[in-house]
Image 1 (cartoon, each protein chain N blue to C red):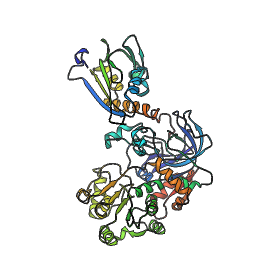
Image 2 (cartoon, rainbow over the protein chains, first blue to last red):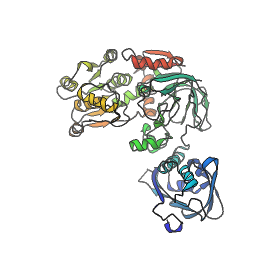
Image 3 (tube, rainbow over the protein chains, first blue to last red):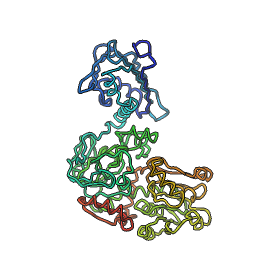
Image 4 (cartoon, chains in turn red, green):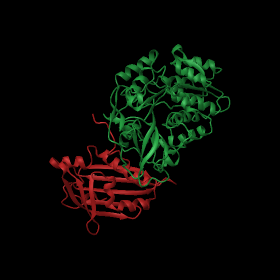
Length: 170
Length: 389
């Protein structure tokens, strides 16, 4: 990834995250699902929608503070079928960010090792609050949970949930 | 519907709560016929399990009839009578494919916390804290059961609820603990703790060919039940030197396999036990290693230590030197229940087991809160409480 290409993201203050998970599916199948950005909200709970916006462009909508929404455009910067997808925000994004996902074959019969990296420049003020929501209070937890949900979706067909279950309320 | 809800240490209440709904395409909803209180539910009752929330519905041993199903549920039908494994498995991950169902990667929606605590997350468990996924439990008139294509098993009408309910956790947990001992002809198996898991471990050890089973407990009523199963009993309350006693009973060798069916809330005795209690009280350690110490020191060289008893956190004063130098094998794990529930069902159909024999109390779900109180305060008379809905 070209670190110089995003203003702000080559500073030492940038937040960088990296997580790896083994998913019991082939690299091509995982790549195809990941390439469909519109399905991201299924496992990335802070996103509202991601939709195509022209050649190699996507438009992202995320939940912001106080029921607001935050939007930005991103460009696909790398796309090799079955191997890697990378993206970065276009100039003018409130929070410059970039990410990548690599698909590497795991040893025999173990599927694919999926490695996600994210990098963003943390802003101050109101936006800092939004970033906290975007990536969770703990960014490490947010990306870990997103990857766990992606794995569950690909292996078991559903994301585990207890939202909406019965509970005592006295 | 009525459900048993947790509100704090020794504070559980039967309340009217909303009926469960289908939340995923492979969910079923069952109308509970029989559910049970597990000894491990007392850990929740004592407030020693982290990440409980007020209003959580408890219970992980339950069965009933399907009243609703999601569109992706394949073989099961509305009206089927089913038994439900206490741990939830996806059936598709690395671990489920190898029948290590309790290690399932995909069914705990709050897996991050266990990953931080234990290095890895294990399967979701009904009614057993948000650490284990936060799933609403089975001590309720209706229960939502996710991943219904994997765990639940259909059962026929001639089998009795009280036998079947014991297959959802207690019997298979005792059975796996015994199977983990790799019992050979002539083997002596020692079992610490004669609650339901210990009772079923004793019976399973004999089924799997043990020459002798030694049962250790401090409660006379439970020792009597172990004796009825053929075990040689040792009342540990009369026994300061349990290790020496076991050596004497086994020709100086020690038991070939030792099962700790007590776990981290062991009652502490003696000087090192006092050390455990002080450290637990000061929150410097979470788990009492009292039984684990006896087990490791008693077990014969190159023998097997099998741990079905629940541990949740850190334990102190574990004799690592003995563990290493004696070449012991340790077998652990929550029960791979989706597999062993079916083993138990076959044994029941074949007339090899009668698991309802350990049930001491039958109450209505309306009296569930009182059931916890009775269980907690009266271990001499209570071995197993089932609740009828």
